[in-house]
Length: 161
Image (cartoon, rainbow, N blue to C red; front, side):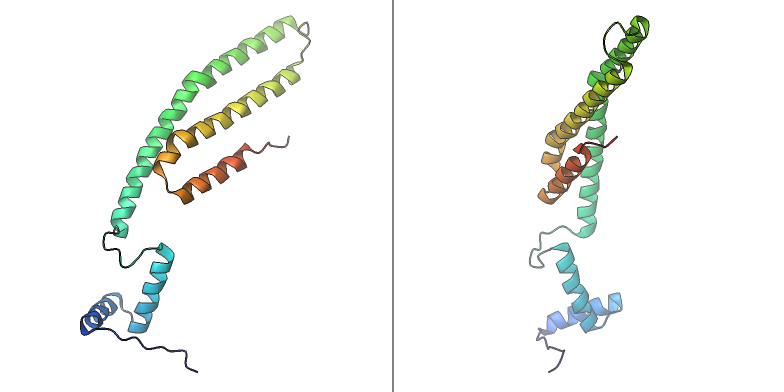
């Protein structure tokens, strides 16, 4: 039994294969193998003539990522201004009060710090989920959404202290 198979192509297709083979320095056999691998990896339908050229698709994707990056930075800055900075000032005020009252509140600085750490972790989770909902759903393919969900789940797992 032979490992080789024959392909019957038109004269025009044969000329195209010749030109591509010469351009890329590949034999017909290697060119066909590389083409099959390309279509398998990119999941591109070779019959779809409206498919983006990889350079154009990459440029579009880069523009989307840049826009998403700007939106993400704006989102984080807004969360910092609206949530994190006020919380920080309140924590500083509480630490000052605890230092002044020295034990009359019934809560130790360690307990307060543990509670505040839990609050900060909850806010971080809320920010991640808000970001996911606000931006990622609107801009990325389903497989990227799934990867984003998995990353959020990994980051949301409680850390051992």
